[in-house]
Image (cartoon, rainbow, N blue to C red):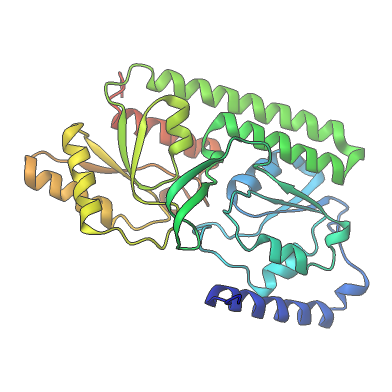
Length: 322
């Protein structure tokens, strides 16, 4: 027997309200799949995809994020107004790999679905399966969706997004392709910046809040240990905290990394315990998962956040000149 959990109940209620709003607005009779100014109407689920889509679409697309900035995307749920907004898009872009577990229900509810191009941005990418709590809060294996943090994999996402733009608006294919090529060149340069900044590091381990940096660590040959797994609802026990205190002590780490969309309380606890046991200060620096331009990075774009990440990683890994 299928059991409907509390999140599903909320989502189903949102669908019902959204349908009523669509009917009340008379939207079903004349779906608006393009902006009033004639630009391609695009909805991307969260900030990195929104940023990539804006760069590709330029002045010929109207791009909107579905998940608001400064939100934790793993646990976010669409509201009726979000469903109505998504239904107006001609191009809908989502990450995939279980980052948006509600996306199939949302797409299935849209009246404009038959006129819409849908892009799963991780399609064809080498997605890693991790052990631990998944985004539904159940123990087992879960897909790690955080590919956008790795510039090389981000460039592959750009290719997938470009394909959606071309299918949705073939008349402007050359324009979109030119913009995408420029964006990929900037991502290639970012990859080179990471490699140069971390080339002469003296450490190979960091401690972070959330298991979101494994792709980045794999790309640049270091290890990322985290307090939280893939699920933001996970509550680490005392044994996990103690394990990471030992990691910081063993590797003589000068910093631990917090993320803007999560509380720093775990990292502050780890840093404080290391100081108590060793007498040396451990700082908490930001390593941003780029989920939504949150906290200290609210006014920075994808590349600016990445460059701040490079600077802080260089400190944490003891890179020359940091």
